[in-house]
Image (cartoon, rainbow, N blue to C red; front, side, top):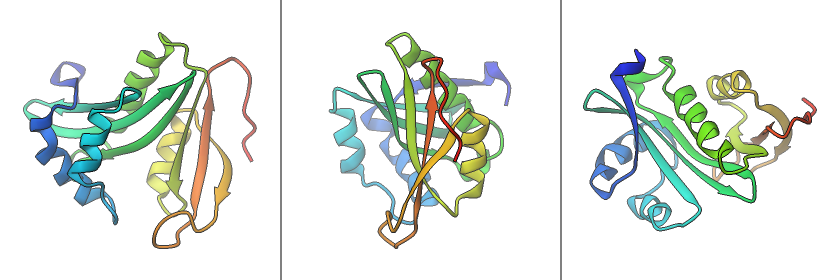
Length: 156
């Protein structure tokens, strides 16, 4: 995917059907339209969409509070996976948040989602702790963090 072929724009209400399609293709317990609408109305939330031509390739939802970026939801369209979509979204969010005092980012990921864990490691995240039985189906969550403040976070 060439840089001039994509654009990152904020979520608009009329984008919800495309977002929900990817959400349902990506997660066993997908967010609802109402959950995305709540993020649209949340003053600390940002939902950004990466468009490739006129097709939605992926999206990222995050909060930035007091220098801490919490990644809530990220997904890539099945036909756009392994093309750098999620990485571009993350890097865009990091750059935007650095201007607002970003110090640390964190997320939870299913321990069985090896592709996502590898992506996050490439983006500078390290494993912090496991949250046992975190997901609705009982799967564990791996908490991963990235420090932007110049200090280091131990990789356990």
